Image (tube, rainbow, N blue to C red; front, side, top):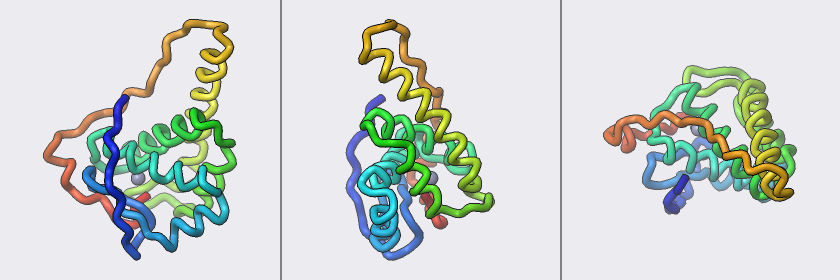
Length: 155
Ligand SMILES: [Zn+2]
């Protein structure tokens, strides 16, 4: 799974978002994430946005949960505790909206993926099994959709 690096643009609006070309970050909101979740929280947010770009954009609850799973795997591989995800999620909408699931559902979803990735990492580190990594299939939407901004209070 390859993700091209993307430029980051600071914007005093919303939290974080991507149009597939750039990542937009509200520095004030991100400072709050860093204060409570540390660098792991910042990395989780960035990985979530990269997840959107990687899955070909698109929106809705399924796309958000996929981006969260992408970010949770990334955080597990980097060796951060799941606490950073929990702290980050506490700064998101707690209730479900039209575009985003509520934080509780997102947390449960991310936790499952985090522990699954952690197990794979542990097994490969220990050379106990040679089980193939199974990755969540992420639906790819049309390239034309990539340019559609998806930014309403977006993470
Ligand atoms: Zn998102």
